[in-house]
Amino acid sequence: MKMKSRYYARYSLLPALVFLCVFPCVIQAEEFRNTSGRVMSLFSVIKFPNIECQDSDGTKGECYTATECSGRGGSYTTSCANGLGVCCYIVQESWGTVTDVTLNNTYIRNPGYAGGYSTSGTCTHKIKPINSDMCQFRLDFEVMELVKPTSGTATDGVCGTDTLTIKEGIDLTSINYPPILCGLGTGQHMYLNANPGKNVDASIAITLGSGSSTARRWSIRVTQIPCGTLYTAPPNCLQYHTGTTGSVQTWNYDDTNNIHTNSQNYAICIRREKGYCANAYVADSASNSFGVDGSNTKGRGGAQCRNDFVGIPGASASGHGDSVERWCGAVFGVLSAPGLHDGANQIITYRTPFRMYVRFNGNADNSAVPRRGFKINYRQLLCG
Image 1 (cartoon, helix red, strand yellow):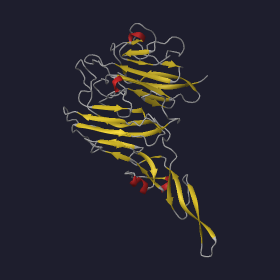
Image 2 (image 1 turned 135 degrees about the vertical axis):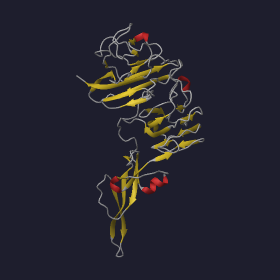
Image 3 (image 1 turned 90 degrees about the horizontal axis):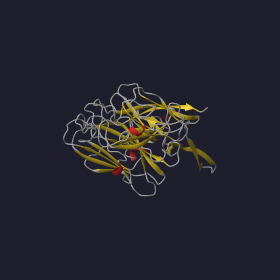
């Protein structure tokens, strides 16, 4: 998902004598008197914005002068602002201690990244708002590979070895929000409430259990989002997608053991784009792209989906009329309930804001039936 820059219009100042400014910048004039007393002007400062940039290895950062980047404890390999600045990013590697994330655009990585790490223990990172205007933290799991949940044991989907525990400043983990995770999460993202004005910190705790020597890897990008922007997520959205097309999938979907993590309870929100009035959803064309409780060959809907389900308010074949609201089983998009259904369908909703609800309870069994979770593609439909 591509997003516009998530940063304030901050600027860097670069001393210079005379400079041709082809990058968007501001040249400030400074007056002085020569030996005859005449007032003259000398172009002395070049000002450029600290906008988002991308390093040569794909790492995203912000454009600063090299001196500013060093002062922030940052790293860079690529220039920006037409050579005036450097693409600066922050990396934190810690283990066995609590580390504060105090700067925007910080990467949390395992020791020895991009290699693996397998020493047991817990590391915790506290995320502190950079100022009182920050409403949300966004976590991008650019790489996330922990030990996978249990599989084939009749008590599957449990994070029995490793855990990723994320908390907002006001702890809601007692109601599984955000859910405790493990396994594969590369490419996922998450929004956390920064609770402005309450002087509380969010936290990320990564625990590696001693029962596995598997090499784990993670690279989590932490950015901070001001209140009231076009890219600020609506309240109570764990994920927020933009654009007229896209896909959403459950954590650990790429596990070949076909098991999702248990105890999930969250909303996925999709921004309604200008000129679009409806959203259409269809299961991905890959095999086993929908496995949410119930039969392994049939689909269910409505009240039959009590424990594990995907909920899309108002969705039906046309987006009008009755909706079963919930889907489960191995076929997505059944149009009537009760009963078991063979055929998958596209479903449409006109109900806004566009939201999907994910509910998995604490029990799963994939010993005979795949419980992969889901990958669902969406497409917004034009008004009229």
